[in-house]
Image (cartoon, rainbow, N blue to C red):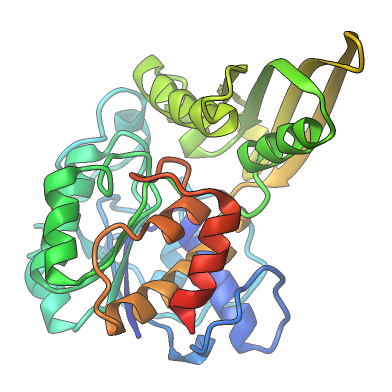
Length: 339
């Protein structure tokens, strides 16, 4: 299975480290039982626009600034990072972070065809919507599955999703759910409280990190984009007042993320309950296991001729799926799809 990485940032770094850890025989929890071996996953292309990454071997580029994921595993991928097109996403704060390469962009569509790419992972920054759409269109033409880990509406774009479905090519998204991130943990706590008869009234979550993604979401329009998606996932139209999203950037935290959650509600005959939670995780590794699972799933879906945004997969792995399916139903149907 041949993979292309779109964006060589922190998520790409963790994805590659996890792959190499598995190849070295390390056990990683959270991987689904899918009949595709890790050794079958081969990264053959990587695109970026930063001069500190373009032209470098991928195994070195993933540890270049502004990446902050720690090097825990030796990565063997030595293909050269290629210059992708700059379409958007570099305005505002991000324009001060990225050192744009002066190399001429490659023809993405042609490179995907030449390398016979099966699956593309879109790992671009929040706000790079035009670029995400461009890569998705290139993947459709080259018959490559597209996994959109970003908040950009790609799987939620009706015309694009319909084209993928007709072509029988998977289009999975939008906005990846972390393995154990603040948003899914927050949602899980509320689900538990409601299962115990607690009427949750309101809740809020703030996240602080030292990643580039945390820095750029200080801009109001990027912050609102992520906040709306997170809040919608947690509340799920249950009438709960929820506010969730990145609130600050602290450089020395690096890849560490600190999440604070407050949940207020009532139980019994009106007794009050308030829960305060502090959660500390690493951002990059949170993407690794979901991405490996998705890469394998997308290959099976493609082999079965199942195209477009499969509701069961998108509901389990993304914060903003086009069609929402309950976790129980999605889990059951996913097992059937993978048989």
